[in-house]
Image 1: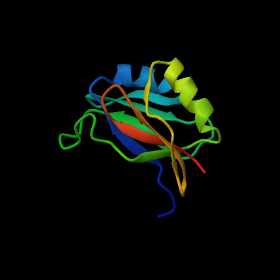
Image 2: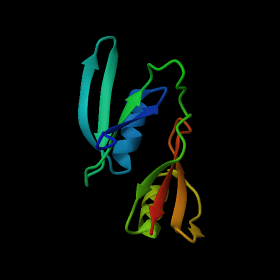
Image 3: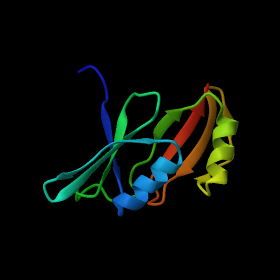
Image 4: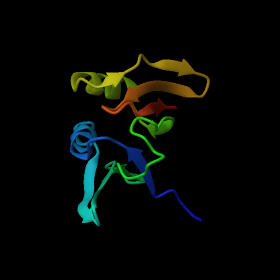
Length: 116
C-alpha cells in the first residue's frame, strides 16, 4: 500500500451533493455511468485523495461519514466563505494540535477544517 486514493461519501441525492461540494471548492474529476449507478468523483484543487458520492452501499447510509479532516491554511477565511454559501459550520475550536471547525453537508456527513 502507498496512499489513500478515494473516500466514499454516502449521500441520498448525488446531484444535490455534487452541487454542494462544487460550491465549497471541490472540482469534478469524473461523472460517468457505472452499471446501474452513477460514479461522481470530486477532488480539491491541490490534489491528494478524492471523494466519490455513493448511494449503492446498503450498510453505508447517507450521513454516516464523520471525522474526515481537511487541511486549510486560513480557517477563519474558509469558515467565512462557507457561511457565505449557507453551509453549516461550527465556531472555530482552538486545541493544542490546531484550530478546527466542524462542517456538515446536506446529508449530515461531517468533516472538520483543520489549521495547524
